Image 1 (cartoon, helix red, strand yellow):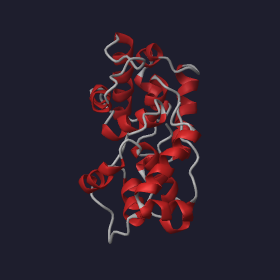
Image 2: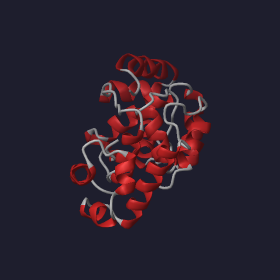
Image 3: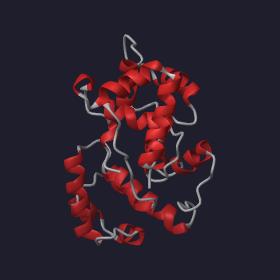
Image 4: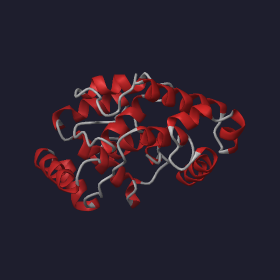
Length: 216
């Protein structure tokens, strides 16, 4: 789902009217493409599989996981799979635990991804109850899969680096400062997050790989 291209553009145009530094960054970097993911269990499972590995490695692991448990990677199939089968797909013991935890939460109905709380903070709280889903993963899911317009993953390295450069700071802001800086930009912080990832990848924005590369 994600934020639509029209909403992404209009959100950034509104931010540019409010903040000259954002207007200048848009002028130099251009508008980003929308970033979207499928709503539901599979996107969260892909996030778990992709944690702390490159996009290429995550894609390979996902293909092996499909071969091991079925193309649809159903929750019941994850729970029924042996350690050997999951290990063969490249999942570490920790990721096996996380994948099984997610599958169990979904199958039991304790996590209903079709009816998450409308409040962003309450929805994040529901998601982080699942083992292996931290705040960043929850925020990225809500932004890319549900298209919630005001999600601001301030703990993301690339968001911090790009925000610091956009605002002309001497160094990247801390998560706390990134949240404080973005307060006046509600309710369009999701559009800004997508722009910061785009800006980070521009020639002037190069840097270490970010967790935002996760293949959700």
